[in-house]
Length: 263
Image (cartoon, rainbow, N blue to C red; front, side, top):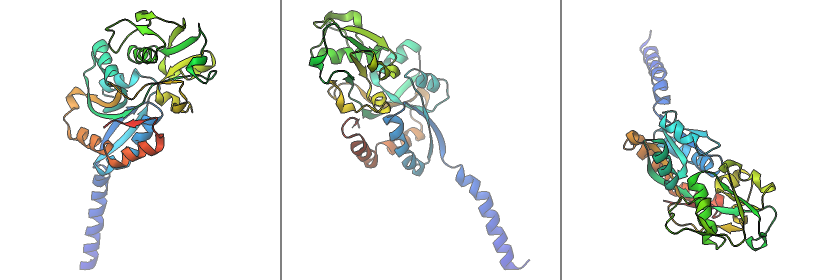
């Protein structure tokens, strides 16, 4: 072989051997998310994360239980769908060794109706659906209290139950159903408490809520990982990819105030 051909062959071999290495250099991070804004935001985070050495695999879950089970079982590296009170409750009740490593966005909770345009129109004795998990159901009851619809016992914290209602002027019938089913319940009830991600997924405009939570308290959502992973470099890279001006601008433009950046 000529010198030129030897150099060319060597170069081609180098490319052939280095290409797989380059393709595999990004660390795969499987991250669970609920459908709607959480997953949509992560799709925007994905190309930024790629520049930071991560290959995000976004896996959607339709409920609030499985993402933590999957994370604890090692089927995910992280998840993005819950707030701190919910995570605390899961850790306490199920023994998961999961921790928050950073904040994401806030979804002000709303009470929606397909029958009435304002809370004042909701009649006495009407049925109102709330979520059947302690954190979101309690959050909905606190919203109803904040707006003067009911009164709860003193000292109930962030997880009151229907049994904690001490005053119910409208004599509302409050029923509890799965959070993911609350949008579908609108056809059967006077009003329903619906988490913003489920409202968006059901094509319900969040600003159409007849009662809406103020963006306050501990309800900013978060990224959770296993406790053993919290200090690993990929966690820092994931947060750095999420907490960028580009993502903050996307949230503001895409959701028009129905979802708020919480970092």
